[in-house]
Length: 115
Ligand code: 5GP
Ligand code: ZN
Image (cartoon, rainbow, N blue to C red; front, side, top):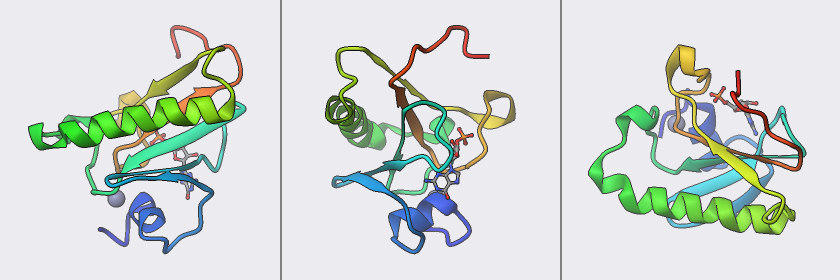
């Protein structure tokens, strides 16, 4: 836990967030600046900088996180229309918060390439 990390503070409940889901290793909360009708962040409780820093021992957490995304998509009513799960890595990947997070986006047509 790093007090300088905004997502660590949300996980620790030191900073308010609209928390949607908590499980053993994962927390999900609504994005503060939503880019789609559904825009939820799914993060590990553990501070991991990005997907580039994942290790073999994180396999269970990752499966838990993706299952939570599918569960939340269902709860948001976008399971049938479809959704996107994306993680940005580094400056050119568009990463701004250096605590691993997956954006769950849906409720509108997504485009490809994402730009
Ligand atoms: P990135 O650009 O690193 O892939 O995504 C960071 C995301 O975190 C952005 O979508 C941004 O809106 C969101 N975000 C940044 N600070 C906060 C915050 O304090 N609370 C919440 N709920 N989302 C945040
Ligand atoms: Zn963190």
